[in-house]
Image (cartoon, rainbow, N blue to C red; front, side):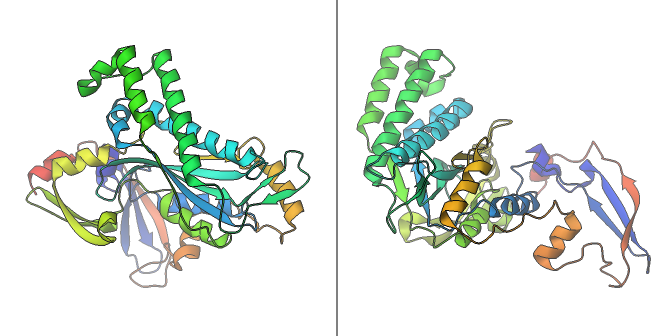
Length: 366
């Protein structure tokens, strides 16, 4: 929260630029670069997308969403690293098992999984978005096995396997002892109570949602751009902060996707946002199967040989911020906004101001 609060303010320091033609001065403050900050992820997202373009295959791609029951939300609040890690493990294991099953594909598919922990109203809603290839590489690498058009796996069977793998992994985690129980969950620290709780979860239906498949590789990148480098909500959904009440737009999926306005006290708004801060160092975008880091290049090269696509687009070298902004927006950020002729030259480094006002003080005086 402190990083977001001080982002692009005097607290982080900055620099002064001066136009070499008209002498106009522009002051820019440094970004916090925190991955939860809604102002800092645009350039990171674009660079990540550039790296993914060379990995796309000329096949149909499927979008699946795996959701944890809300019963697990309190456990996740006390054990986020364990609960989130098991979600990745269970989903990738289930998809890998279905892909290798001769009744479905009989080979290794490729996918990217993205952790989301929020709903539109900032409530806790733990789910994994997966983009998966519509086909698989045969175990011997001799052929590409395409999925039937418009269909990958039966979602009810996939949900049952996902549930079994997750609960089995959670049982093993309990046996090893890393789980913490507090508040209403304190009774679950007893093995018998925990086993009973797992049995109740096993008897409930778990949700796996399969969206319409992407029509080729291009829409995959459009999807990635919306979902990868974003946490909880974007700045454009924020409407106001008046008398300690935050108002923001949200889409109510239970009411025909109607766009509504939610009003929350500032403290509650912050509490909900903080539910979605992932543990330090936790990787919330992961690749598996054909896209696993250790074998990605060799397996993708073999897939391209079998699919005979046009040459993969070249991945550009890492661009400067100026070059990237020019390509994305057409704006020359180094051009003077006053005279539109000169170039801005850095003339002074502004040191950070450590006693910048904290967020609480700002809320108390709003």
